[in-house]
Image (tube, rainbow, N blue to C red):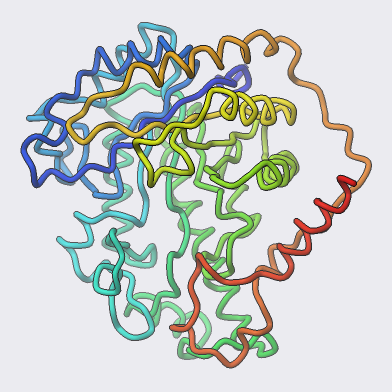
Length: 401
C-alpha cells in the first residue's frame, strides 16, 4: 500500500522567508518543529526544501542556502526526526517562482508582452520561464541533489503554471521553430492562430511537468509526485488543463473560499485524480495565508476537514512560520483536537461516491468571449471572469435546492 492511501491528516508549514535580516529563521528548531507535528496528530508532513524566495534549506551545491540556518541541513534534520516518529515526509519544492534564480540569471526570466519581467511589474516574486534551457537544467540538478541525498515518501511541486503570458526570447524562438509563426499579442477566441498559441502554452506546461516528474521517478520510482493543482479551474492564462493531473500520483491544491467552492473542488478532484485520496489544502489562517496572525475557529477547520473526508479526500492544514523560525503551540493543540476526531473515522474510508448527477466542466472553456480584441497586457490570470466556471458553480448551487 502506498503511503498516501492511508494518510488523511497532513500538514504544511509555509516558509517563504527572505534572509536579508540575520534574525530570519535564526530560531528554527527542528526538534520543536516535529514536536508540533506530533502535538497536532499529523500523519504526513510537507517540508520545505526551498521557497518562492529561492533559498534552500539543505546544503545545496547548485543554489543559495538560507543564511539564517547558518549552514545546518534543516531539511535533513526534519526528515530524520519525522521518520523516527512515523511521520511521512513530502518534500516541498517551488517551481517557476524563484527570486534567487530570477536575480542571478536574467535570461531565465518570464517576460510580459510589454517586455517587463515579473518584479518590474509589481510582483513579489521573480518567475522563471520553463522554456529556458538554463532554468530547466538548474531544476533538474536540484531534483537530483534531493533524490540522491534524502529519503522521503513524496514530493510536491508548487506553482506549476504560467503566471503570465510569456514573450521571452525562449518562448518566441520555440514557437517559431514549432509553429512557424510569431507569438500573437491580441486575444481572439474565434481566431485559430490565437487558439493554436494557447494550446501550445498548455502543451509546453504539461511537457515541463512531465520532465520534472520523470526526473524524480528516474531516481526514486517509488516516490509519489504531486503538482500544484488549485489552478485546475483557474483562467486560461495559467495554462493548466487535465494534462497536468497525469503527471501526479494524486491531485491536490490549496483553496481559501467558502463551502460551495470546497464542495465543487472536492468533486472535481475526485474525478480527476489518478489515485485516491486526492488532497484538499487550506490554511489555519483566516481568511487566507496573507493573514498570518488571524486564526480560524476550531469549528470551521473541523467543518472543512470533515467535508474533505466526506469525499474520501485527505485534508492538509497550512500554517505559517514566524519569520524568526518559531511556531505557535496553541495552533497545533487545536489542530490536534480536530485530527483526533478525524482519525476516528479513517477506518471507514475507501468507498466510492454515489454520483447520480454530473455538472459539465471544460478545460477548454476557461475564458470569456468579451476578451476578444483585447491586448494580452489587459488581462490577468487571477482576476478575469470565466462564464463557464460561473455557470458550473451556479448549477451546483441550484442543485442544492
